Length: 467
View 1 (cartoon, rainbow, N blue to C red):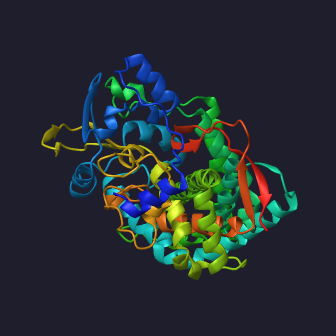
View 2: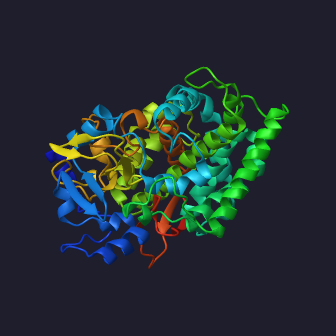
View 3: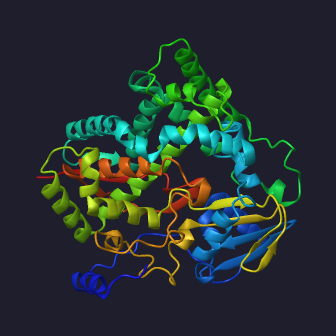
């Protein structure tokens, strides 16, 4: 999306040209072992400088064809028009997450996916966001009190803070207020341990090992997933005895019906509860951590944010009805999602023969789109590596539907996108009225992908009280 000359001129006149960090872009081809190392350490570092300009990148790894899409029309062709062919997640994603998620919506496909989608989507649809907003506001207000108690100059790991806050929100949403407060810490520790130990690159698939051959993630990963399963199973049992809140997500999953009108089994309820927790926790936490960092680095953006919050809210906490009035706050979150999409690589496997950009795609081939790379393609975006929330501001044209895909696109678009976007806006609006955050001197922020895109392993910042 091209910026207007007026926005360009204003940024240049103010002397602001902030380019936040991104991985080094290779200018020479990488060998097999170099790519292997990058895939394991930071997947978005595998892209070369030339890749950002190329609409379609074709490669072959041992026995598997790989197509990397970097063009809105090709995204539309693959993820929307040919959804039936390209709906399956990659073997890498399935083998990494299936031990944790089972046959949950995120990793299932075909009839099973369609049936679960019919059961789950109504529970977390955009129309339900108003119902969930009071839990968001309540939790964010608790964080405001905790930060106020810490006082001026307190040191915070903002990545950890946002992870705890969003975990509390989604935990209370899924389990109910009472059980959510009790269980958040245990579930988050299980998720964190699993992500730390799971192998996100399944090289056995690339050498032709069949999908049905088991992959082993190691004892630490299995201990972590057993912890998560144990906690969720216990919650489900308590709901089955009538001890849970029927308005909570698990209560709604007990009432849900799949595409054929059947109730979900307890295992299916557990799998979908874990999918919703995973989707609603770390992705939003990462987005908020990145937003705090980006705002801290731009005086212009920070001033405009505070001006909007002071004018629209005047010190009170925002609610659901305020979301439509916080246009600049929303623009900050949307620009953050452009620069740092929570899931920076979306992969699919062809279930049948298809076609992309005039090229034959054989059954079993892998097709990948990187929102991280697509959102920075110079042919689509002005100042693609710069932090410029104005591009999403009031009165600006929206980017193309298939050019901006922070929540994926097509039938497999994230059903909880409105939940996550609303939570991020309410969190930033509430806390930024009362606090500013400054990056700890000397700390180098790094964009690092391990399943999700994080600002390294932590984000140390100093708390400043406003006013």
